[in-house]
Image (cartoon, rainbow, N blue to C red):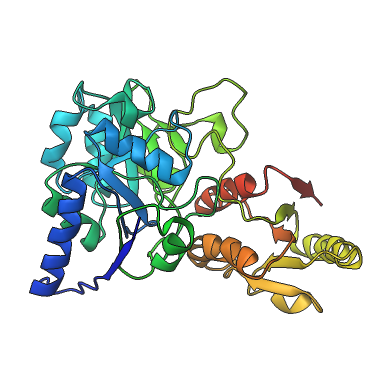
Length: 355
């Protein structure tokens, strides 16, 4: 399959006729059951017709993704939600008012129109109203809800720019829309609102504190911080399987900064002596303390949003640089740090050293 790559940079003003034509071509591919990768404010998504089981199966096949891993449906207007769900609980309405459009996915009891091939065999459905202009225009142009997991090979770091999608999926999908770098760099926060008490299933840029400011009580699913047990079905994308992993072995070292730097230096020296190409994922505050190693600077501890935005890019850079062993600094699991560590832990297969 030949993958067409188109570039759209909509800016603040009206969309140009040229970009409208490109979006119509992308929409036609989706209407015909094809797959289109497109930018969102979180990561790039791999889109297909959410109501066509064949399209969902193509998404799973292109990614090499297990079919019990649910897909997120993307809409471009709140009115598009009603046919897809059995009910819209009050808690959902409060969150939608506060955070839609934006990087928040909500889980509802699904309507019969949503195929099990899209919901991962579950009676619930995950739905998001993205803020990204290109994503919204694509959904409107295609005239359908778009099912879209991250546009990467399953298990690999999520893509935050079109070149990442091309690296993983060129030749496997019909089109890639290059809309530039993604703003947030981590997938959306996921909250289950199908039960009596809202439950955080995946942390993201909409933090637990922000959710509780709106709703009061919000519980946290155990899969946010630990592995799911064998045989447990994932309630949302990213909960069950190994995710976000480069080819290198990743180890997280967490504790106070001085102890962390000391331990990572010790481990990196040992790996280097054993002949492994070794990398260190560090922050702006510590990068100069690692001498003689390949240091990948992820961002600043003073500005955790920079760490979130760069995390997947740095994990991918490990592969581009043929790094075999990676030692990553850990972060406090509060607010945005909860989302950062959720992704890092999965990338490391929960290989963590506390110091």
